[in-house]
Length: 279
Ligand SMILES: [Ca+2]
Ligand SMILES: [Ca+2]
Ligand SMILES: [Ca+2]
Image 1 (cartoon, rainbow, N blue to C red):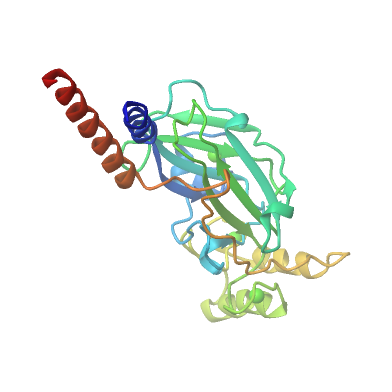
Image 2 (tube, rainbow, N blue to C red):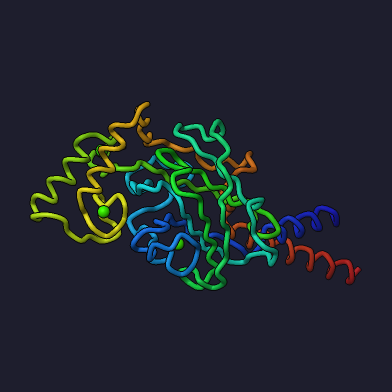
């Protein structure tokens, strides 16, 4: 009985790690919104794509999960709390790239060239981790990011999310992410309607070089994709695997259940000790 109680306490407390991921963002590194600064620093915050959200386990991709940036995916920002105190490096992550529904078959991606932490710089004061890849090393495919449960991250279990890249895609058809002449026409027609080039915000679906303007250069980016030989394979609107408690490649387990279990274990152990003393 005593051993069982100890086990319950240990299991409950071991899952009580006070750490978690509160933000997962893609940003346009070295864009106009980043002051054209290729390094990781506070400017990156202004280049976070406000209209993009991570694809999470069990979900099917939409235009909200991939970017059209001409440099591909070159910057990811993660907000975490409860970091373990040791430096985070590439061994705290697994990166895979692919374009199918089965990420276990994807290719291991190159580690970021830069992993940096800004303490307290997260959206609500968490620590902000910035990952930077060279331009166009991850493009026209999906990037899976697994933040591992290591002493450095402090996470109780891995956290997994995805962002995609489809350079030159306007998201004009929700049923696919194919870059076609229609995407180029949308840019040209918008300029014709405005009487020429015009300024846009960071969430414009027509500003592929993210210079803050819709110009003929954006139309040329689409044309470049259409003319590539061999042809660029379109990004697939994938459905990624759901949470699987049998795998160690999983998102963070919910804390409330662990908390209750831990408290239950502590209370039961205390009661057991009281009964022992009374005997
Ligand atoms: Ca930057
Ligand atoms: Ca399209
Ligand atoms: Ca532009």
